[in-house]
Image (cartoon, rainbow, N blue to C red):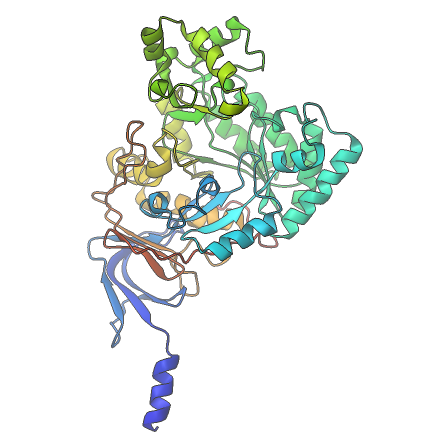
Length: 500
């Protein structure tokens, strides 16, 4: 073999990286094992006891866990990722794939949105649902506060079929928000049939997450059963003291549905407070009804449990609770709520408020986190006051695994990687296995924890120094590399059934 041929072979060989000496937790739920992982290009090519090759990039993972990249099953990075493609807040918590198009809102048409992410070159892998609200708005315009006509529904079905054909994971809905709240169950069943016929899934921010949460769950089951598709509950929670303790009943309903062949899963973020608009504190749009506001505030524990994370009409109110604002202004909490709605209904302040509300039971949350049917998410959005945006995944690993021993580390990793990958049909992702995409997180199980709070919602976690996405290090020894190797993940032909 001559020197010229050897030179050609050397040029043709792809550079490799060896992650050496770590405890591999492969994403399947199997016990950890000491092993090395070799990466070539964007794939894992070997797992085992491996010796470094000449010229190979070697990363020591001694004392660390090597796991598949974390999949954020409900994300809102589509609100800012094109402006900040390195996605530092996400990669620092080990997230390698974000699932967007949530709560009924998505980029439209989805093919063009995917093209924008590909052209921009972002760090994260991106997959998306087609938003029910987005499609509804395309057909009905501003005249959406009513049920659809048969002709309008037919147009929506056609648009949805195109979106799913072009790679959407299925249909998402936001039934507590406009325009989704004006839809009927039969409308959603009809659209579910379209998504299901293409192998898609239905995911929903349900009509209610507090006093009527059980009714909302039942509607989701109806849509799944009659639409002939599987379904997922977005950021599952019980947000009212009147129904705390119902988590076992909800989980029993999910188990019973599975026995009937209806596959229901959910995602959850690890906090007892949520972030949304102040308008969802009451069950109707009659914002002038003081009694509804009084009951709504009572259900979540009072005005001290409502923090204004954003308020454009008066920035001095931002970061303060309704109780604190009442002390400042001499106004009662109901009057403040009504003022917030009135001011942010003005065109110059439209969508100019958000609240962080402490309204969930730690016991209910723990049961959801421990359930094998429930994966994890951030539900995160940049610029808000909720720490879930920057802390959800390390909080699970540090608080609920290491400190509270609620679930094993192997089970937590499965619920962060292999389970959502299988459920959403992500081919060759979610496991540490030869031939799979090299989305990999290296973290210290003895120190990993979140540091984000409502006062500092973007504070980075600790204990996650290295992250690979598609074989490229986006975080290396705690430093952001600036690389943007993310890929668009299109819907596979058939989404996976849950493997518990």
